[in-house]
Length: 173
Length: 388
Ligand SMILES: [Zn+2]
Image (tube, rainbow over all chains, first blue to last red; front, side, top):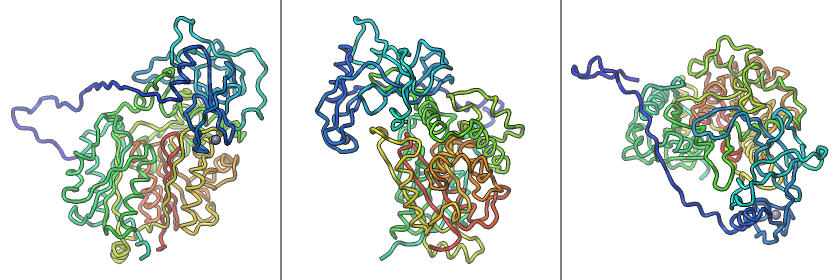
């Protein structure tokens, strides 16, 4: 880049190259009908998906429509609080704004009875023992702390069942 | 009236680096001036400007095209801003080429940039999602589980990712514009680097770069003139873009349908029936090393589950029969918004014989590729020495 020529009175002064200017934005978020129904159920310690009338796939959290078939998903399906780790990663990177303690396991979990994995934490097991196919169950916050958020599930932990067969979850990997 | 033929007649880029000591306007102007010089043109020769970058909240400068219009000589001319996440550098070039192919303009300047030193990209890619635990950890956190899925599905051995990282970083030593020049890098040093997002190691991850890339595209007349003056153009033989939803049941994030379809489309336009044989060199968007074998399959260079074997056999090395990322790729320079255009530009540079030390001899057709979002946007072009 071209050299910056300063006037005489500014010679010898250290130039400002950059400065930090934090910005703050507050949002109003409208969850929409399907997600609102899902989150209200979560506040009652229930996991409720929706089934597509055409492809029969069960979406959780539901979007109110099937992205593949473009039709409304009205039938509600009560889901188990257990599932299978389809895949995961061990996060060990610190960055601005991060709140999690390192390392932590971020996993895609296919809840029993659903057809699309949700992302959540795996704990109560050393991170290097987490593996694909591991069977896990939700650990909920105390009942008086339940709210309309997936943070009502603190994390998932191994439920002691034998690993799921690859065939049962390979279409979601 | 058919499509106009489109030629790449000017290419410029900045030296990619951790901190570019200048404003964003200076950064993009430096790349644009180099492209104009390469095209033997001045600002007044340009009919329209097409600019792209990744999300505005990376740098916190909303709609930077407003303030960059003047720096890019767009006053009194049409200017368009493109945004398609990480693929934006590619889709920006495609929009520019479309303006010429449609016969609307004769000479278009296209520019893409990112200034990560003014940015918090990790933070920006990890914004808490309402009603979900705050567990997101950047692009690596998103892609690492899918890399693990690829390894499981293909049975690839662990060292494949290391081989890709080592190759790209060694190639970067031949590219004076590359950000990382790691002279001491070895297989062991990559292997021993820490796992940031297991199974992705630090040395298998792209850097955070400041940088810009620019190209001047013309119609057939402009391409013929450049050729007559001894500056061979790269002719655009095909362009394609595809998108797909981030989430749907059964979505294949290892080998996404959007990428497969996009590749078939661009090959059909360019008359390519066997990409492994017909394409001489490829610049593929590989921000994490394992995406090289994954995209080799997605781009039909290898059968599903076989991409890693090309890596292991050295096929994608500079002396292999399908050299990939001779520039050092995204793994060696990642000014995010510019990274896709750099892939397109490096493909054109190979066709034009402009690559210096990382030039492959006798390139006739080259592929430029970019992807973005949660592997949901795909942009590609094929450029060649002969007119379509
Ligand atoms: Zn459906």
